[in-house]
Picture 1 (tube, helix red, strand yellow):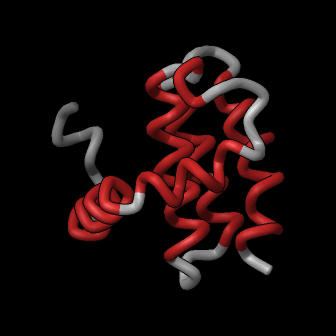
Picture 2: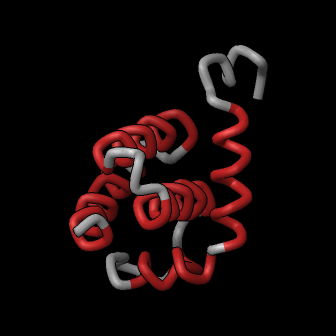
Length: 102
């Protein structure tokens, strides 16, 4: 990843998000499992990482609007994921968001 790739990224927030996602991965994965069409172990590693970060944000960062969380996850999937992974990410997060953001 180049400096250009990270331009405009809130690096302190990203580091916090990454650290907190790792610390809460079990809770995040429990939430995810009910909305996946396959087991966690069957997910592409990139999709799994994107979903973990986004689900963490939905669950624990209520100040970030859910539409922003979903949109940013989709954009990351378009850049780093497989051809159709952004659609899968969108579908999963669209189901999770209303439940965790009641």
